[in-house]
Length: 149
Image 1 (cartoon, rainbow, N blue to C red):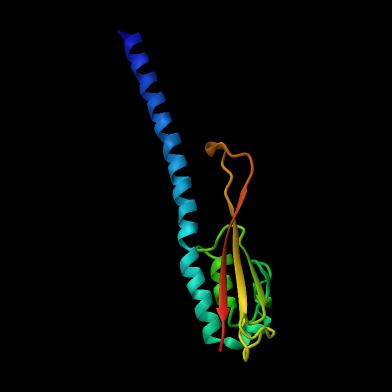
Image 2: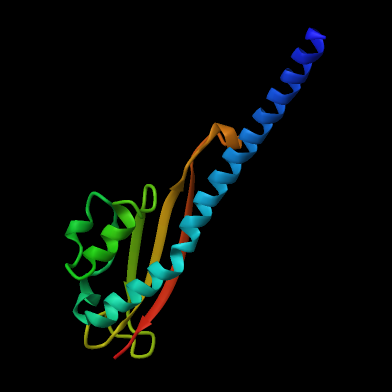
């Protein structure tokens, strides 16, 4: 009788352990999905910042992180801060903004001629032994814009 109870308790404990591992994997997947859901609003916010402040076009290029976003144009800093610091930041975020000439006129990037911009948002997906990962994974999303006046 006691042996039967011990065996039942062991089987029950193994089942709970399996559920806890599945829960950990599910939670990790939800967290990563949360970062992917941030991409479209972040892209729209960038578009809005540049449209409202066209003077930053000539100086917005660069790679921005939590340690150097304060060197970006002032109008761009709140957007960069949201993505690189605080509770809504992407883990290990790096935002690269590359600019080029206006696709139509071909001139240099400026507030009077417009320009093309490519924004790449990169972040580190947390490595987790529970998920069977041995190293962190860098994920990224790239957006292309044409700002014309």
